Image (cartoon, rainbow, N blue to C red; front, side, top):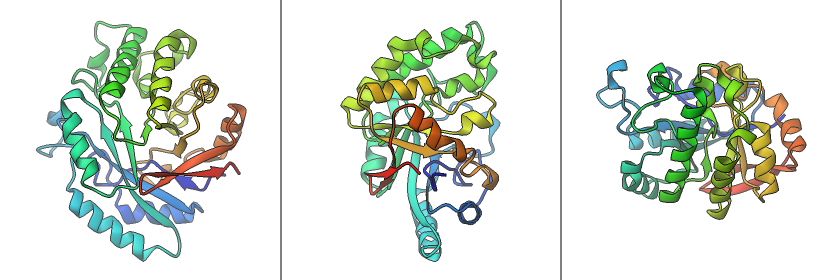
Length: 273
């Protein structure tokens, strides 16, 4: 099993109640050798009415580094704790994220599409007046647009995240159905020297596959993609390294021999176990 989880959240993210220490301790119990905590920064998140915070999904970066650096030292003999961030790409926030990432020594930066034209597909309202296929197409088109505008990140997160929330999930979804979009996304990522992640939360959400679909992983490899991180996107200790037992065989079947971790924004290639 791969022993590094590069995508997890703590109570610094509005959608998690788990303390950083609880996630670190659970990672040690799971037998992991390294983790990267990647809490959400989704400035101007469009649904503050659902949360108590004045500005949900934005955290105090200095406090974050202070606390995680302390735990990194405390647990250094048991696990390698790295400090990352997951940013929610939006056109009007390009300068904001550029500054945020430039001014802080993150080990790893995940760029994700959490909102489309100011709406989060998590909420059923996003799909009002659209088929699943139309909703998915809108997300993939916006992903291409954002990749052309912003490149201060390391990997694109959960590329087909939208499929979790469709009315019929994967019934109107496949690589071939959206091949033009995915090929452009993957080519842009490769041209920019960035990567993608295998996000095992897709298994947790009952899709039957991790994000992105194996056909997309296979196509990424065919196009020359090499940088591929592994994360469970856990928000609770019990979700750490979720279904990681499946990942090595999945990647091997798609043509990969290595996976990637990041430290100080530099890729570290590790042979698949």
